[in-house]
Image (cartoon, rainbow, N blue to C red; front, side, top):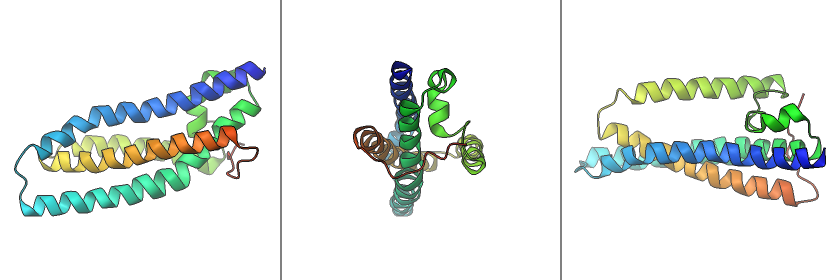
Length: 168
């Protein structure tokens, strides 16, 4: 079972990180297109303020303080307490979609639903506004990916990891 835990932990870490990187790669060209146009002063101000907001709210508060430590704790939990189902579905387990506290499951599904709705709404925006929003999202996701990698490294290399995996 030990090898199942190790493979599951690797799959969970790579799967979640891969999802984030995929989103960054898909969204970044939209952001770049916005800055290839001549932004006026108002657009530059909005772009800077939105980037700061997304770095703080999504990158720092959302990822670094909440999602990344909990996801890393769940990757560690999977490594230490493997099951075949958790290993096969490791990215979903790591993100809290199952075998999680009620609150964690609600947050996972609510965030996923919210992201889908926001993506659909942002598609309605014209450039450069669509790209300005995309730039903020890319900044937040990049911060989040880096914090996730750091959290996973700490969770898998330290003797103790203080964050709860919120497993039920």
